[in-house]
Image (cartoon, rainbow, N blue to C red; front, side):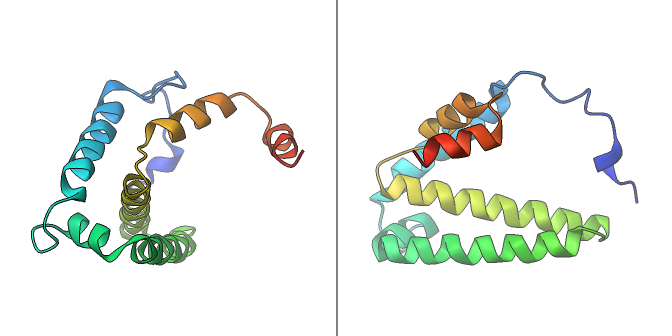
Length: 132
């Protein structure tokens, strides 16, 4: 199996802004989350999470974070299958984080804006600015 981590990143966008495909999937997810927020809990998983409340959603975010950490440990020297499992767990974590934001009447855009604001700033500088 081929390890894609060593391939050239020339196929990756060089801009700090998301591509239209990346933006459209986030926008589409945000719209679905908005629609399902007030749906009947028996009609969708997202509606059921919203119905159970913030604590249940936070529990799911924590569970997915733990699963992502464990998958990362497996993927560090693992097979392509283990690396794919890490991608899947990361997708679960991102998805449940989006559900959390939706529950709080937020979406992904402020997060993307914050990432864009930090782009090009030293992590040490950015972190020290937060503690002041």
